[in-house]
Image (tube, rainbow, N blue to C red; front, side, top):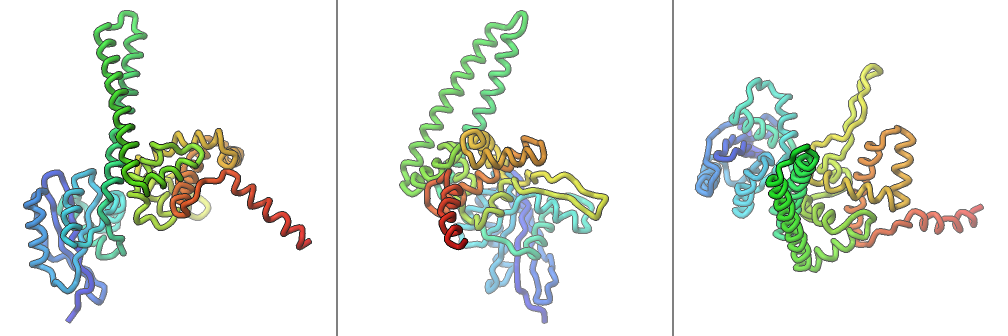
Length: 350
């Protein structure tokens, strides 16, 4: 008789409902999907889901709950499951969509999506998801709110400029736009003050922010955004994983001698991280000799300034991770000092 070695509940999350597919892996490495049910995306639905899974699965083998990161609709369920001692994994939607292309399914419904998520969970080794610390969650909420305000303010300024440039602009419209811009400015200042006060409430986080801000181009808002979006670099094991999470990893397509596509960044990751690193990278290129040299070398090689700027964004993000892990301030003359320290050793050898 075959023995069950792994159990997964694949959950397709929507705003109002949860489609749950149970799957299990046997000791001969054959997967099986054996139960499917829909629950409301509410607290009562969460309790019913957990009761249903416990009734249909053996208790001696833990069941891993796997779901996509669908905006914010999955968060309440994930929090509920973790608080009840369940193993949870949250994956990016592009991973599931890419996996579904390898299956024989030709239709795309909530049911087939839940089945694909369950099979994905059975076949892959997945990292557990942990609930974000309260301070990092609040930083993420505040920095995202500020980013939305900046975008809205830019739209208002463009509308105001268009009105002012017309031959007969509407004065009342311009007055309303100016009031709207003033309100957005006020709210932006309020959010910045909240971020500063929030960081001061935790001495450990405050110390990390000070270290990150020692990097050329990185300011308080950049540090707060990176910490909020990565949950304080929780579950980030190395630089490669961080750049992949941010979508700054390089995607290349090459086959034989006839197919050779241009390398591009994947953009399959956290867009808020990529956006947060853009202006700091430009500042680092202007004011830090190390990053300026990297930028100049890449521009000389490819002649594409944007590509070189993206490379600096990636290196700057990796440097933030290194500074966080080492707990030391950034030294812009580090490479130069290392060379000077090695020079006497090389002279003695000769």
